[in-house]
Length: 202
Ligand SMILES: *[C@@H]1O[C@H](CO)[C@@H](O)[C@H](O)[C@H]1NC(C)=O
Image (cartoon, rainbow, N blue to C red; front, side, top):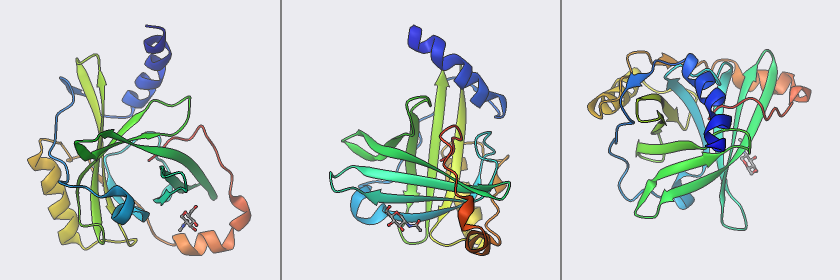
């Protein structure tokens, strides 16, 4: 119960900017035989997403790496108001039987986030889904289209949206993420790197 009281304001803050749906989280199909440690590692750029309160910047990307102790880490970054912001997290395999059902722990203060890989070919794109169940009364979901490069052909985006839709995930509010002028900004302003643990985004 104490945990719930602490979590509630966080959940409500997350929920505010989203479109909540009635009922518990849905169970989408995930990538069969998902291989996190050998082939999913490296850099993924955010191409499109359901609008999320904690992601306001541009040039959003995630870099998955394997540590010597065998744990997978992720560093996500965005450029917000001319500053490069980063947040690091630990990637958890939720279910040994289903390796595509990942979770990410960003810090002690933020709620654990599910991070399910619905589909990926590892070399071009990845479709990621996350859902927060609030007392099984309603849920708030998040969806991302990720790419190995800063852009994807429109046909690939359309196809990706269809995968979400066929899993009963409403992506009608999905928006494109800005990946323009990103490499240039980082070269110009390398001193602006300010880690901010309070900024949560995937
Ligand atoms: C990804 O993370 C690894 C390990 O920290 C680092 O060596 C590499 O430079 C990072 N890549 C990018 C593009 O940030």
